[in-house]
Each structure stands twice: as structure tokens, then as C-alpha cells.
Image 1 (spheres, one colour):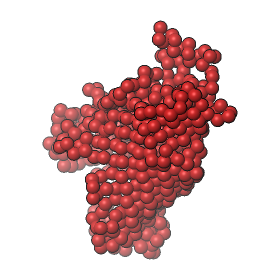
Image 2 (tube, one colour):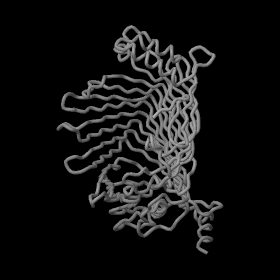
Image 3 (cartoon, helix red, strand yellow):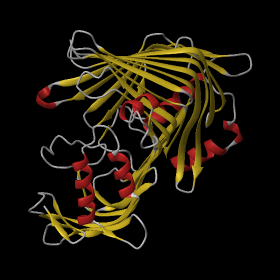
Length: 499
């Protein structure tokens, strides 16, 4: 009967009335309940079903494994405007405290304060279909984490903030379901991070990103509003989450006083995006960036200063996130194109331009089976000297590395035995082979050998190793090679045993 009554309430025209503060509050609590969390408040000023109400001491609590997150506003006001919409405002002293239970009873606390007082949040629609519109000239966050005396402080300022979100409760073939989704834009995002260093001066990182975007979507079955938070050890089985962050031009700078000089790291890109999704038992991650660069100046650890650029960067990962006794499929790929040193760095390495300042491309794609001994959201403290995952089957679908006219390509399959250890490597015993095609290696070594400071004997040794571990083909400056993993242990490269 309750299910029938709920379906009637969601689909009948009588539910299509102007929303009240109570409708919005119950929508928030319903959304949080889908993730095992609660929203509570101490007292109410005004009538929940009326035109204006103030909730005092509004608190949400989420518990995931050893982490408890408590968020709080001193007050939240909901005021019905003349057009029937609701204006929602927040006290300026928002706070979120994350407490992670650590080993030996020592907890790790992260405190975030935020100011939403300049934000205009307007709600319209119906009780089962509420639409939100966000606008703010500026939103400010501050996060402090770490032990007293060694704390990290992160300040985030979002300027020219706007967005739209929707919270819908509808009836599907599998029953009543909640979908919460939205898109947001920030004209400018500024991040300043101050963290402890070996000297008295904190290491400082500054990041400025223009035209920042965020979108999200969360779906889950309609569940009763909780009276107390549920301590989750995993994502609810039918919860689905998608999140994407993007940015236009981004520039960052990190300064660290290492006692013998200040090291400066700069980085950035012209644009890029990162997305994360989790549903059923599939975790997906993608990252892209174009026009990226990084540079290191005044390196005090003896390493060289350098500048490096990337035309394009791309990554994709798809894998399970729950513990399982059986191995399940996964895949991962990375592609870097147009990787090259900047002109100043290259001039120091090759002042006569003997190699022509080549750029490199790197890409690989693997897939196979993976078994998680502990879920991604699980507790790994019990795995002291043990890997939380095992890959019994791995396929190298493609591998390609090219620098100028030289390239190496490979593909193959390898299986691993969790119950047998290779005596030579100490790793799980492997069986399989990987084949490689090598083109232009001799020409590359000749050009590399013209660089000042390169030992000619090193070039001769590299050519000798190529002749030993690779076989020439009929084409000019072309070789093939095979790496074999033997069942009884050991590795053979092009017929030569290696240990």
C-alpha cells in the first residue's frame, strides 16, 4: 500500500503545486538518505509549510569506513518570493569536519570553512521535480588538515559562480528512483596551498584556472529518510555517480625553500578535463589536457633545471571497486603526444642542434583481469605487507614510443600465478610473451652520440645490446624482439636468458 500511495503521489496532478520550504528540506534529506547520510536541525523559525522559514543549526553527517564527515550551518533561510519561487540563503560560517580514525587511536582531522552568504540559490518546480539556480559573485573555502604545528592550509576562491541543478523523484521499472544532477561554471578559480617544509618557510602552491566547469549526476533508489546516518563500508549497490571537472587556461606555481635555495616548479595547460564515475561495480576515470607544460628552476637537489611541454595528454581507467574472490575485467590506457623540452633546455643539452630537437609520442593500452582483496572504499590497514590487488591476466594491447624517426611498438599477453613465486624476481610466477618491433634505433643512437658529453663507449654498448636482444629484419634499421616469461621461472629476451 505504501508503494502504491507513493506512486500516486508522484504522478498525480495534485502533487503539482507550488513548492514550500518543507518540500525543499525533504528533498535534501531524501538525497542524503540515498547515500546513508542525514540532515538535521535544532529548531525552526516560522512554519515549514509557510512562506518563510529559518532552520537553525543545520547539520549533515556521513560515515564511510573510518571517516565521519560532519557539515554545519548556523542557519539556512527559505523565503517564498512573489513569483512562487523560493530564495534560499546560508549563514556565512559554514563548516565541514572530516575525522578519520587512525592507528593507535590517533585521529586525523580536516576542517573546512566556507562562506556561501553571497550566493543566491533559487528553487522552483514541484515537490518531485525541484529546479535550482545558483549565482554568486564569490564563494570562499578554507581547509586545514594535519597535526598541530604541521598543518596544511588550502584556500579556494571561486569568482563569478553560476549553475543549475535538478532533483527528480520518478517511477521506473525497478521502482521509485531519485536523480540529482547539475552543471556549474566559475569564471575564475584560485587555489593557494601552504604546507609544512623542512625549513621554517612553508611550501606554497598557487593555481589559477579560468573558465572552470563542473557537472555531476547521482542516481539511487528512493529510500526512507534516515533518523541516524548509516556507517557505509562500500557504496550502496544501486548508487550511480558521475562527476566531471573542466578548465580553460590554467597556471600553477610551487615555491619551496629547501634550505640551500628556493626551488620553483611551474605547470599549466590551455585546457583539459577530468571525470570520475562509479556504478554497480565499475569505476571509470578519464583525464585529458592539451597545451600542457611544466618547468623546474633552481633545483637544489642536484638535478638539472628544465622545461617540458605536452601537445596532448590522455588517460583512461576502467576497473572494479569492490572486493571480490573472483578476478574481473579492467582496462587502462595513456597517450602523450608532442612531448618535448623547451628551447632553452634543449640548447643546454644540444647547443649545435645535432638531433634537431625531436618530440616524443608515448601510448599504451592494457586490459585483463584483476582481483581486489580490499575494495577501493575499503580499509587497507590490515594489509601490512600485502598488495590490495592481484592481476592474474594482463594483455598489452598496444605500446608505442616514438622519438623523431625512431619507434618501438609492442603487444602480448602474460598470466601470473598468485600461488607460485619466480625464484629470480621474487614476484608472482609469470607465463606468456610480448613481441616488439623496433625501427630507426641505430640512426637515433648515432644522432644521440653526437651530443657533447655522451661517451662513445656507451653508444657502442647500446648497439651491442640491441644486436644481442633483438633480431634484424629485411628492412633497413629495423629489428624485432620477443620477451618470454617461462612457466618454471625466468625470463628470456630474444633467446637470451636474463636474470
